[in-house]
Length: 104
Length: 169
Image 1 (cartoon, chains in turn green, cyan):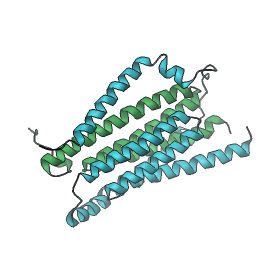
Image 2: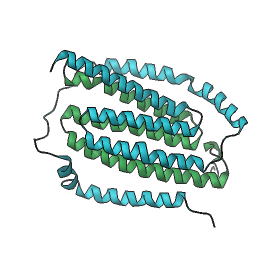
Image 3: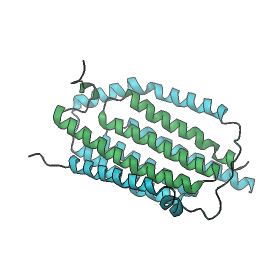
Image 4: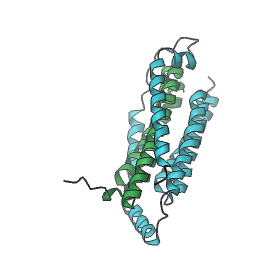
């Protein structure tokens, strides 16, 4: 058993995490839950970057990318939460199917 | 390295990953959004432990403080600005969940089994970065322009927070 086989299960779990997030993103109708699904997918990507850094031996670079990812993630979440609250104040619901004012 | 030690590490990694996957499942499946946000914070904490184990302490600190702390606070604040669900909406959610999420275990099983075949072959290890390459030199050296972009993105985030909690006139 070497280092690569030690981190190999991480690859499977990264895909499983991404699958959970993507599945929720596809089936949910609640706008706040869409943000949660995005967060779960981001966790998978964060883990993938760290495992990539470990396997390639470029851990410092991987950490720099993860810090950048976290900064962008938090801004995306805050902006998305602001949009959801604004939409809720406007329409009175979190149901994503009600957002069809621009539907042709 | 000692094979027994490596096996113990592998078992520990799988336990941590299992906890993280359970946290992610709870995040997407729990009915109450506050509990879902707490489950997300739990997922972040487990990810932080994994990062520490994989020798990435700086990223782990950021993950713990920002993802498990700040994002949870922002999310719970957003949930508190929304009216709680009525009994009818709760019943509809339970019906919706059982109807829509019944495929999720099957999807996870297929992805897991499929990938266990794909990732069976070990990858060749590329050359490691030269000794002395530190995070701060990488952050402030070749990626200094990225930091400027991050500052601008953070300012956009602050603007988002201001808009989130703006009082209506």
